[in-house]
Length: 172
Image 1 (cartoon, helix red, strand yellow):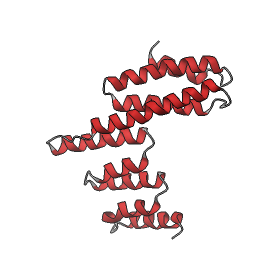
Image 2: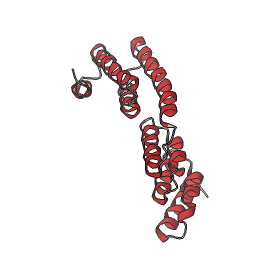
Image 3: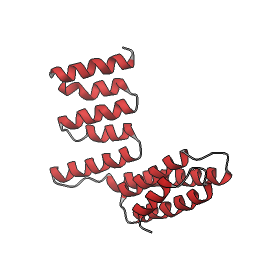
Image 4: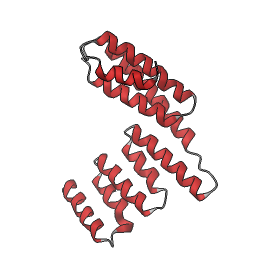
């Protein structure tokens, strides 16, 4: 069964049908691990993150659910390391380097690693990426870093307003 059909089956399967849901999760986990083996880092991380979210909706009192959650988390941890290592080398050309940074950022965002995504975006040197980095810092509840990321754009009125909002959220 293709991944899309497995995704749909998992989403429509009742949460109480633990055995069936775990079977679907195992099949989707295999799809995610195949993507990782093919070095399709983003697709693999998106699959494993979606599975983690699905497992969070299931009753945790089942040993099978807890074991499956642990297995997925171990694979996500390994995938984070492998994906970061695979995405780290930048290309020679400036446009290729930017594309590589954006791919790395998308991977970190898919993993929910907002601080890492922000750090990657800040490396691009593009002003628009500073705004995206600020949003990532905010998602990680690091408001001071979000303000700092916007620093080079501080002359703009809209950015000054955004910086004030972030400071307010931080309690400054």
